[in-house]
Amino acid sequence: MLLIYCPYCEEERSELEFRNGGDAHIARPTNMAEISDEEFEAYFFLRDNPKGVIFERWRHVHGCGRFFNAARDTISDRFLTTYKAGEPKPDLNEKPKTGAEVETYEALEGAAQ
Amino acid sequence: MRKYSVFAVAREALRGHKGWGPHWASPEPRKQYDVIIIGGGGHGLGAAYYLAKEHGITNVAVLEKGWIGGGNTGRNTTIIRSNYLYEESMDIYEHSLKLWENLSQDLNYNVMYSPRGVMMLSHNIHDQQSFKRHINANRLYGIDNEWLTPEQAKAYCPPLDIAKTARYPVNGAALQRRGGTARHDAVAWGYARAASDRGVHIIQNCEVTGIRRDETGRVTGVDTNRGFIGAKKIGISAAGHTSTLMQMVDVRVPLQSQPLQALVSEPLKPIFPCVVMSNSVHAYISQSDKGEFVIGAGTDQYNSYSQTGGLQIITHTLDAICELFPMFRRVKMMRQWGGIVDVTQDRSPIQGVTPVPGLYLNAGWGTGGFKATPGSANLFAHLIARGEPHRLAAGLTLERFRTGRLIDEAAAAAVAH
Image (tube, rainbow over all chains, first blue to last red):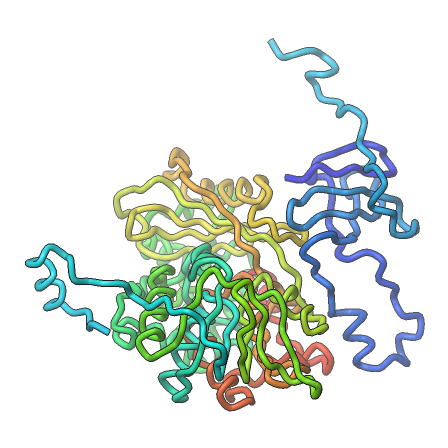
């Protein structure tokens, strides 16, 4: 299971709270009625499906409910970074952000007796 | 090739089993082939076999970057059925099922095809309506599929809990009696042996790193970690890595690669007589001849090439298995693994020509490729040999995503397959 850092909640949470939203940075054509079949196919169906870094959308459905983007390595499943929706593709050479300590029961209350 | 028979077994038993020899040859690659097939799984090896057997094209190489049958062919849950809804799907899966029925004889290799019946459980009115629609469509098309009451389902598979108070009550089931299982490794090995016998080169540990084309755009061969190998025609049958190969010729394809997990239990005595699938609660289970329960889970929600998946996915499946078959609650699971499946948006496969002359594509079998192995291989060989699709695979083209003529199996059944 993945651990995902939500850039809105500023916290790393389990994948169970998130829903994958497919590829990020795909602009919906504003002139949908006028584009050709080839253009619609490219927008709607064709994907890079990279073996390596993928830019993808996630939605924190069981948290803040907001969409955000992530860069993830599809070979190791490691997240390189996550960033808010609408922000440009980040420079992946920067140091990745990491979440604060996760609030577990044990951390707050001490180990269970 | 030495023919396998009861006499061969008896002869070898007397000679201490020293005379069997390798199943297939491992030759050095030639400089040039008529056809190269990229991907040594069941589909690729089978296509090479049918090219040699039915089309007289024997100057063929199958290039496999790992070992044959080590990808999804060796990682699936070996379920065979043909009870799909649309004619395009029924055509190809039924063609495949008919080939399964005589495959062991055809290959002279026991693929252990076992038509023990595939029972798909219905848990609610939606399931019932959907399954009955499938049953009617199948029977009109000449494919066996029948409706069972809960009591009949229980009689067919005694471990099933049909109590009305169950967490997932069973209100009926669809049964395809000709469906069943086969031994997945034997399918790869049997095709490899029969293809090798007809002159096909099977080249393992040979990863394709580039696809070369001439000035007209036509393919001329592939670069590999063992050097350049020329070919007049190239067939791609590489499952989860199809997108990676198509990037070498700058063609984007409507595929997403996702992990699909399966697991097996400790071996038990025979108790489970058939294959049971529950699409609503997402559980697939059968018992192998070794006694292990073979259990299939769902895909993860994200793209990945990691050949592993989230624990919550298999936990979810085991939750469902324990509710449907309470007697299995204390069975221990032994191994778990993942394969990378290439999924199309309409959940139907792609088999057809590509924009690149001489390059043919067999992909998108997603979560249901094993059952299609003989049929897909047979029709892919036809496509490569003739340069145009067989009538039974005519609807599976890559162009359907442009024309909009999708084969929307996923929405029709509201399930994975």
